[in-house]
Image 1 (cartoon, rainbow, N blue to C red):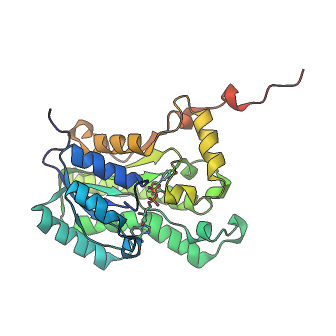
Image 2 (cartoon, rainbow, N blue to C red; image 1 turned 180 degrees about the horizontal axis):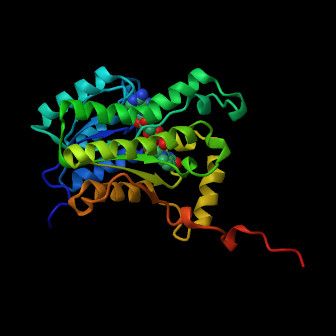
Image 3 (tube, helix red, strand yellow; image 1 turned 180 degrees about the vertical axis):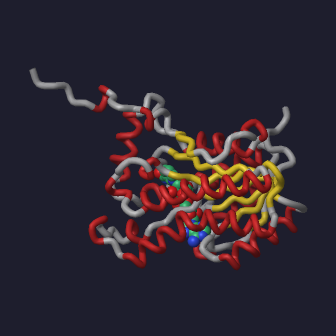
Length: 269
Ligand code: NAI
């Protein structure tokens, strides 16, 4: 059988543990014939979990803090050497809010933390794209995908300043998508994923309620990390060459719903 990503080279950011969406993307991409470098923040590699994935996928690991231009330049340079040429895909699967971690209420945000949220979760996409652009590290028609959440468009109070970060992330995908598209036909899209049980996801207060609400509201239920990985692969493939600058909902239909009777308590007569 032909493999969807045979001959494609890339970088996958954000595989922390087996729950991570990036972890599933790496496993599926490997099964579909891609070769890639795995990367994460040096601090996230302390537990050594990523080594297991690298072994499974026959991949090298290059640590990089996505808020460091120096680290990113080194990453893109070394990845091309290891993989033997320019890259065809990049997954940005990165998110972190110190305000959420420290349970700061939205009406009492710490602004140093807020800066950090935006730098790690949104500006990092610009840094990744700008590093690749300046080094001319991507092949024509390469595909860059970043993961986002519907709190960019609608209010989910517990998502806190991550909502602002996701709005910025989606905007960067559109803006850079224009420039990279004009220059090199490179596609840049975001996938807006259902709530998913991962370290980042379950760190949001009230996550269980988010998850169950969306699962009941969506006609197909919540999309799993595994299904998300498959969708990411379709965007890395040549079957989606004309898709760019989009925010694509991968949520079992949740984003289009108004009401679902399953969520409404019956009216008292
Ligand atoms: P995760 O916790 O497994 O992944 C987040 C990753 O970000 C981790 O690997 C972490 O080490 C990395 N990271 C944090 N700071 C970094 C830095 N400075 N430099 C490089 N990497 C850094 O959780 P998950 O859920 O797989 O998250 C992946 C993406 O999916 C995130 O953008 C998240 O916001 C998004 N997403 C998650 C949803 C969920 O419910 N889990 C729903 C919609 C989107």
